[in-house]
Image 1 (cartoon, helix red, strand yellow):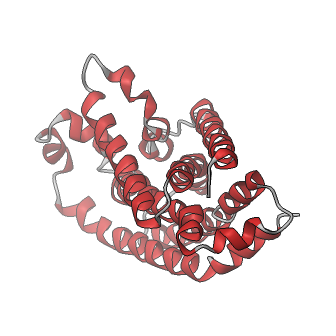
Image 2: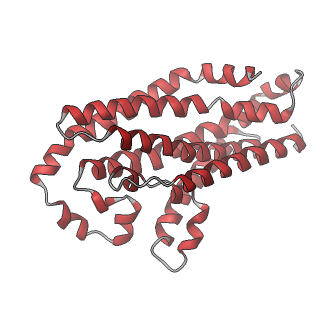
Image 3: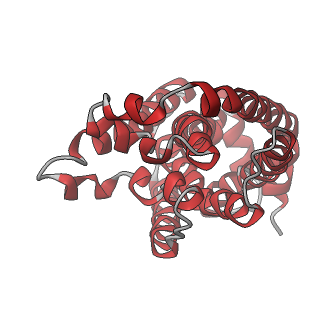
Length: 261
């Protein structure tokens, strides 16, 4: 069982390690920069001068603390935007790439169902998400202790665990584009634009009377500032993201069963 998922995961190990190193470098850089912010910068005046929608979008309400600083600089930017877009882009090539190169014809000639192919290709992305979270969490904990502004291990573990449903949803969005397109580049552009567009949409509507429309954006359900700076763990939001992931993966598998390849 899960031979396709294990094979796909092994092929992705090098990329996942490179991604982990890159994001860890971001974490160390931000941690090293924080002491100068804490001692020589009027954070409250800076935040008050910004538009409220910008403050809310990037979780700047607790920017003066190490927890709030990391939530904004590392998790709101690198996690919600960069990593979310990357996973959507990566997952968008899972099926479309094989269809475009005609490898899918060979794969479907084997005794495997189309639904299994789609599901296991998606599962191959999961180890990437787990590895990145484990490595960066450990590096961030060490870096904050090294600068003398330690972040509680419980909150740090929580923000990484609760980011997993969000990242799984972004990857599932990429998968949906992957089964719908015959060219990997088309699927990848569509997935990237959708995830980033949802972020912008949620940012714009969140401060309006139409904030309820932002419920379609996965970013609505993951707030690093609330977790790190306010010790608020929204497990219902995580459950909603997991449910959305299951629906997207199931719908992708069902669509690919009926699609002519």
